[in-house]
Image 1: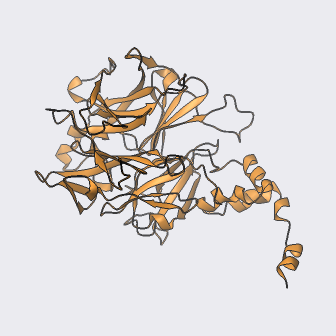
Image 2 (image 1 turned 30 degrees about the vertical axis):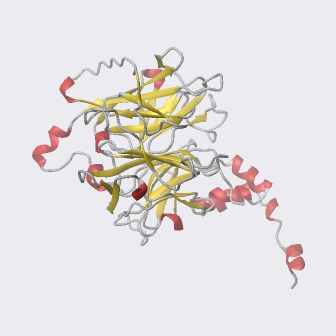
Image 3 (image 1 turned 45 degrees about the horizontal axis):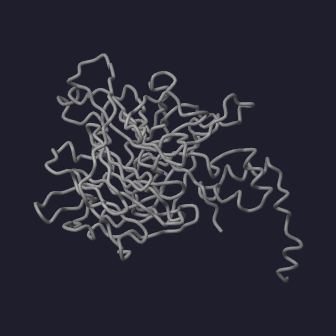
Length: 436
């Protein structure tokens, strides 16, 4: 039978009833679900009626099950993962499991939109779009001057022999950007480096280390997060001090110090046990074409002392995660947001996100999602406006919702992981691309 005859007798898949489309997607792996709307307009419309893992909707990325289906994870060789729908009213536990070729033997350490930053134990880093299958190799960390790569998710400085474990790679631009990708790697003990498509005067394929402040203390160069806004790279350390580098010509020069906000949190407990962590983001709804810096402060309570006599760490992530910043291991109590006015150099406390929006934070590059107030039906989006969704939260659950309308206190904890003590960090994933 000729191809034309086959086409003439083929079922009109575009006319498949929305209910049947829903039944089909219920049985698909997450990547196939994301590809499903690209088949035709009819299927795309059906997916809009039954929103689930659709492009533009946030999902939580976690470890998957082992290849034999057991709820235990001994390695990442299979490239197994789970995507969990958090945008639907019935999302409390709805999970989709799959495998990706580009994740075999690799762990994710960051991401932006539909792209992930992945690495193997030897620190071979690349960008992966799991929906399209596209992969972009990043330079070796050995291209950082004075650094060698012994492996085991660490690098080592040749001068002094200090080991630096990889904590996160902030993917500031994806390969879909007109200027190409831009990534910032954060290591322990003050090693911070960036790479970009065509980086350097001659477009060298390398990572460039950023110069630390002269005579800086250990805490000064213990960076917790980094972001690039308007040609400047900002990094915040573990005590909330912010530094900035000019990406155009001064990335390896002395950083400028950005005066931080006055943060006064009355936690109501012994200050000797206070702990905190910091994130950076672009402020919501910045006007004038200029992005404003947003500092996110998570404060809590150190309960590690209570577990010392048991001979183990109270937070299992410290020993179970392939990649984890143990400075984020504390019992969180609340969060506050502070926005910088670059012109005046003053900060203001942010009590809302400038409208019906939610902010998603974690190892992923921060992003906002529009939220409709007042659902017309139980099937519509169930995200919370003026809330911050933080993945891999200090207390150890997969994610938590901090409500800015109630002084940044935790509104809800989310638990989606299907295995105990998963190797992979929970991270937000925002698919944006259809395969071509």
